[in-house]
Amino acid sequence: MELIKIKITKKDIDYAKQQTEDFDKTKLFNKYECDNNYFGFLGEYLFDKTFSKKIAPKFKYEWLGFFRDNWNDPDFIISGKSFDLKTTVGTHLEVQTPKFDYYIFSRINPNEPKDLLLISFISGNKIQRLIKEDSLNKVKRGSNEFNCIYLNQMTPIERFLERLGVDLHGL
Image 1 (cartoon, one colour):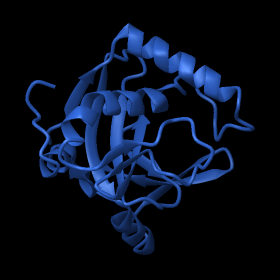
Image 2 (image 1 turned 30 degrees about the horizontal axis):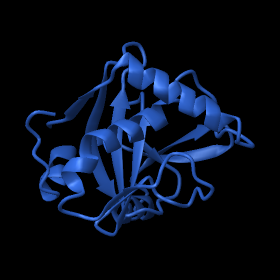
Image 3 (image 1 turned 135 degrees about the horizontal axis):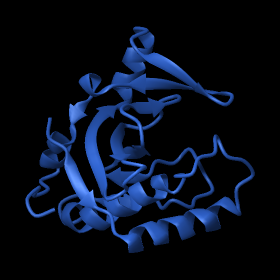
Image 4 (image 1 turned 90 degrees about the vertical axis):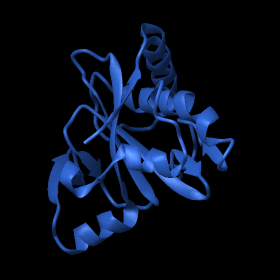
């Protein structure tokens, strides 16, 4: 399976940490706490920085921004479809209740955060079907339960970007 590497600079990390720190001041609670909580913002920021100019000329594209009042909104809207980017340190995608059209699985190595790895994607409909079939493992984090989706259940990310007509060379 191919994956896409997006370089992470110290400037990107510092910016993501600051944005996350500012955002945390406005939150009433955290789903769970971790040292790399800024990875979520960093993933969205780098995805937007890398692909907005490549996708937007061909499709309606919008990053809804990390800071939003409504947590029922997706991270991105591309050609009228909702996308949620899940950036993790793990080896699988975790989703509570699927509510968006697509989920993108990305990973950052917490010991050496040099690259954002865009790995795979899956439709919300397929996640719902897998839940219905009882085909997903579950994990608890605090009082929340997440469905675990593994690589063999998802589609490689390059197929998603090829459909959008994004040139994968020179990233």
